View 1 (spheres, rainbow, N blue to C red):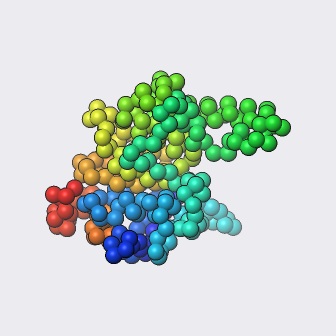
View 2: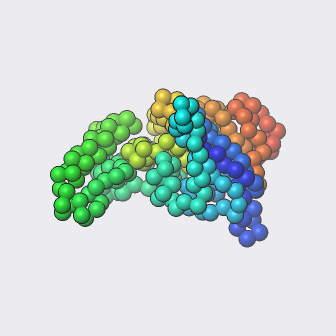
View 3: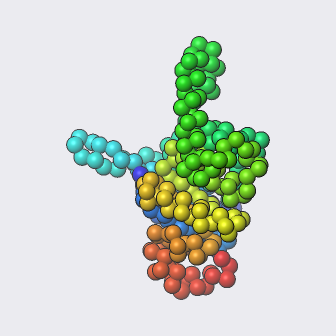
Length: 263
């Protein structure tokens, strides 16, 4: 799966948040977006996820398909879709301020993210109770699998509020996986996380891309994190892409040196 951004522009009054931004994100890749505050990073995420609409430009989601006998990427314009529809297409967001349900267990938090739950339809609850029961069992099994995947299986029956901040981030990622997210937008994943948890979180992010084949896109201010797990990096400034390449190349760019004090 691949995400392509074509000439996105977004203004807030006289402020140019995005200025003809074009980029692409591929599966099996961790792509970092860096830049000082106000560079346009968060606005870019908001547009991709459907929380804000661009003034111009497109967001294209490409997925593998077979046309005739030839496998190829087939594109879908998701620019005008609502956030819930975009999520259903496989784009998941880890917000900087972790959004979990404090009064639900870790297991229930993950289960909330699962797709196609027949129990959400009152008709099914009344007339198809066996279908609902079977599907609920499948959802719980899948949710427990993803809790184990992120290392929280032993926390399944704890309230989310009992987990540490870093564990809550892992929980939120497990919920995205339960929803079958193939493109992950991670907004400063290491921010506020205890140093003891950062290694575990970074290893998970690498595994999601390299082993699971997901496209992982992260906004990150910690340049050591970018150097460690980033495959590619975009430098944004003033709503534009100023540099692109592998971390060793971009992090030596003189434009970045100018913004370092603000990172």
